[in-house]
Length: 251
Length: 251
Image (spheres, one colour):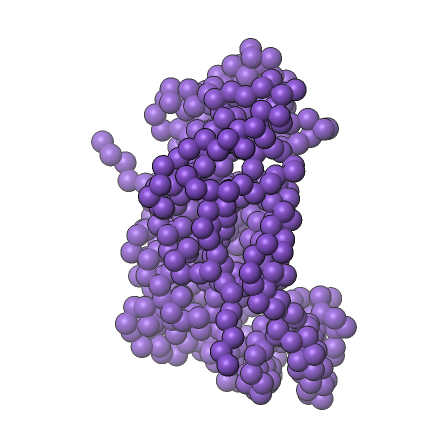
């Protein structure tokens, strides 16, 4: 029986990441959240605030994967062009969503009311639904397999929370980590053998330097927690037999 | 006169970023370094350790931009397939680079010597040159407009340092930041006007929350430092006139 693996792509829209000014925090956050939903983040593209680039990235990702998420470019300023780009990618017009407008009217009632910039945040591609934003009013947008979210990480987090349990997925991937003062260049063959010994697992190897010594975390991933733990225990035994000092739980 | 803008793409190769386990640090580091070289990071793609995906990303980026950088997948383990994927993308065979082999022999002389895994790190696409790695022996690889670097950020940093001043570029983009307790949704129009008033500048807007109040950093970018400072000063004046409290130098 072939089991479906649910996948997602992520398009990050924003000059601030490409300029190096802002350290991205959304990739790890979204990857971890997707994993809990039983969905694997398969590809990320970071593009500038340029309509042609956004359209290209989103079209590639939404066609290739089960879900496509975007972050950034849905705020009130002139460089926030994600909604227009997505509407263009989907071939639908941009409309003002009545519920989004009502949300923004309430949110800004005691903050000077709606203005042209704020009203921009009620614009959606025709046919879209809203993703609640409990942090700052302006909602995210959901249309087809596309999920448009904020770029500010704590606002994104709130939107992810609102989507928890809403998306069809498979079983989450679980991991078990084996740490050892073992240079990965000495144990590459041992890792390869361990990975090949069973179906349904992968082993990643992530070097570290600690107390002036070289080591690595070896991360066994599987949809089956028992299998992950069993393979990790076996690998830990082999590393210990080969004379490498363990680092309990990795670093 | 049309001025050439030098651009680069970046392909990050690694399941560890896509799984959410590891927080990426290379994007911001490489973006900042490129900027000093007078080169703009124009697009990033993060792909899994799958040859087909690596080939697709690298071919798209190397054709579209002046330079294409990759990080990750050049280590000693079974999932390090970047060199093979790049050779396949370029249509050249993989060879053992004599100088890389000599470097690794010296580096591992007092660490157990070369083995199969370590020798993997001397493999390069035919025609490649090496990028020195003063941190951990195994060199980076340079071929055509492609630069293959390590995934571990402090090793990447050493390779970037070795490349400093080696690449043709334009003038670095400089920035001047204006911080204010101004919600971006109230000043969107003012920003748009400021940006349109001069050629050669862009203004980014990055919201923050401080002491329970909403504000934003407005970042003016230009190749001309005087212009960036002048536009920033003018913007600061307009924000102050409109009654927004400044935040000296931004946050």
